[in-house]
Length: 354
Image (tube, rainbow, N blue to C red; front, side):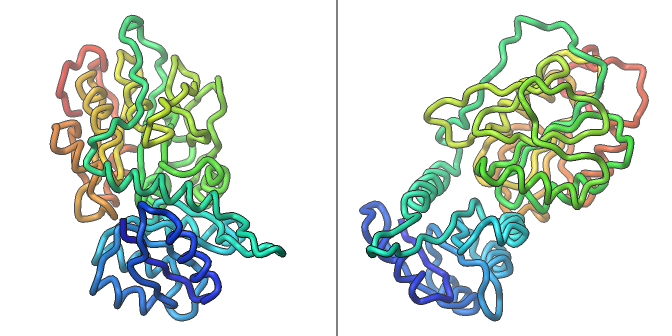
């Protein structure tokens, strides 16, 4: 796989070049020392993966990511001096299409590389995502059994899945949910576990209702947002949050499909499934299961998706009862939850659209 390096520090760029050069499955395509140079080189030779610095003079890494994803979409891994110190920029870059982030390796006092292993691990994970972006590998979802068909609770539930470009999309959707929102909201965003707490804090800046990491056996009540916070599959179980172990070969941990499948069963309260921007196919099959069980299902449209992968997969199999631009999804969720109907969800049949 061709890897490009974007970093304004020549020393950091050289360290990254040496690490990539030692990995037989990767080759260095080019190195850019500014965002402007990266844009120029991308126009000539689009790599498979870009290692993107954040803090650079001129165009910073978050903006460079946005422009690259608009014109030459490819996998982008943020590599910055401190992911914790640059948290807001990390989530901005992820909202613009970056897949993950890791600290820049540094030379130790004995010329050893400190931090190379986490970079190599993430680089290999990203390469797996690129190879299997067409969905040829299973998402690693745990499909709940259908033996227990009793309705679990009357509390309405909104389940949202997002991947590449997700943070900004989630911020937009969640910003529309009013104080006293009448449903429990569960969110799966493909992001490393180390960033989940920071993501919850960042999303709280955009949301009017509380955002928290979902804990095992947490009781889910209306007016709260619970974000998957582990490298395990978040599911809904009779009014409680549950984590199930993801398969060893799973590309996505947590899996959006697992969350959707757990809600594809009779339920007295309104259920809404939402699939936002992202690479691959995770969530499409689970969204279809939700639709077939009578839930309202929504996919983001192509024009507003940073990567039209997961929503496209859902549209292709008719999993979404509605395909909407990002700006319309939050208001549609509110209308669905507030809408009063005499029809019970378990009586509504297969592809019913509310």
